[in-house]
Length: 202
Image: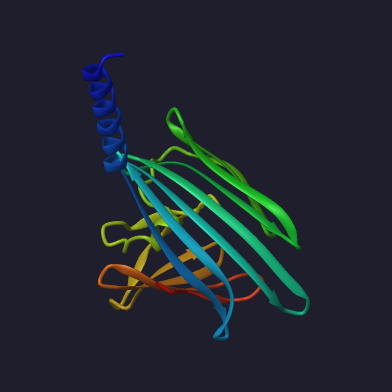
């Protein structure tokens, strides 16, 4: 291979690498999980944007004592294409059982197969969705009036309460989300096991 050809190949490789880096943008945030002001775990939230598509990833781990040791590791993955919710998968591993919930848009409807602690749902939904629970950690839902919860497969209204916070009720549990200048700051969550707070660290 001549010198000119080698330079041309190297130029193409560098251009391709530069374009690949430019199209994908990644953001990460870390939150503490607290019960009664005591930190019991962390949440790592990651968003990857690439050519109009967005993948959201939420990893949470808790370990605390509540009439016995409670350990829970939950991973949530959600994919959007041009602003439309396409699919999600939630896996939960704990000393109270392992669970998995999936939602996927197939042809003209979502196929929902949800299972979590003391809850199960096998259903379908024909209405396209553009906001889900995981996005609450990345942006204030100013333009959205409802969301679908990845772990339950349920659609819930998003209610703004006195310009102070957003309220979402899912399967009888009421969660409150607080934002500062459009950025998620904390959430007060109800849970069948123990209520908790998720609060921004960085």
